[in-house]
Length: 153
Image 1 (cartoon, helix red, strand yellow):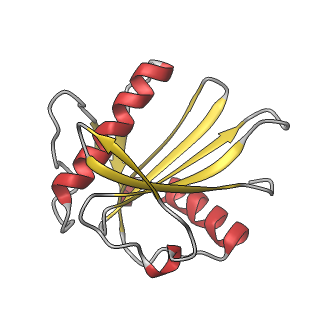
Image 2 (cartoon, one colour):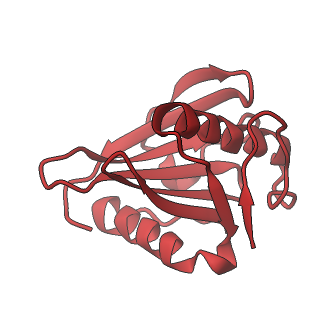
């Protein structure tokens, strides 16, 4: 079942099993607001069980590019195209949100972003990254980092 994320009224629907569910819901809503404002895209997510292909694509990029395997189980994911960019988002039980921005044109920008919900520790598998802080009305303090994708996926 899919869920359209409402950034006006933040809800923990689908994220209840996370120990930082409220902060993760705020992070998800923050992404929904960004996508609506930048690309006029309504952000809709699916349960991990219904989004296996998206989770596998993101996991494959992480593993092939940096040897990263996320320990926490995925709760939700989504994939879509907007503005000539293929986007994928995966939200994990730990409070981690990962997004892939993969420009469709060969010479375009491609990157993986990591965002940590307020209240969660940096996962061991991401300990080599430096995280910058960002303040959000919806999510409190978000810590983020990224890396540029080098290969073709």
